[in-house]
Length: 116
Image 1 (cartoon, helix red, strand yellow):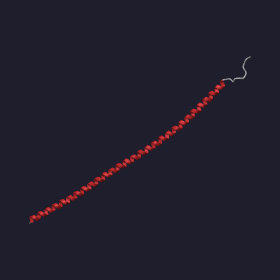
Image 2 (cartoon, one colour; image 1 turned 90 degrees about the vertical axis):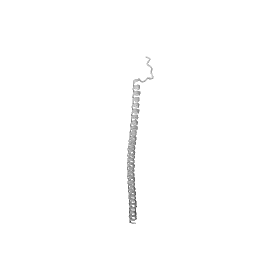
Image 3 (tube, helix red, strand yellow; image 1 turned 180 degrees about the horizontal axis):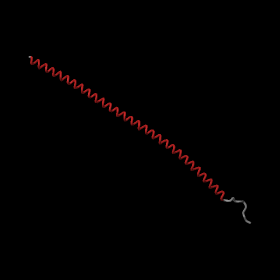
Image 4 (cartoon, one colour; image 1 turned 90 degrees about the horizontal axis):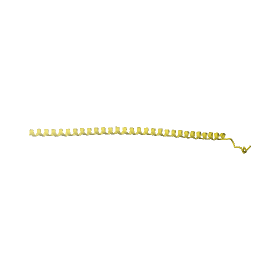
């Protein structure tokens, strides 16, 4: 009987050890699984934050470039208007000068004819 008792004690010890190891292994796997999930979530958040920051920077640069182009276009319109006025004034002055020269070049016609 003492062999049976010893066998039962060994069997109980083995079962207890297996249960204990199984529980420890299960706990360890749960801990590893949680750590992996946390690491992946942290990496995802970092990448997501980096993408958001990049989008914000790109949008800011795009807005600044758009504003700069609008300012340049407005300056170009302003300079084109000034050039158009200078052209108009130059042509008007040239026309007045040509008309004046023509008027001075042609002697006035008198009402009398020269038939002496």
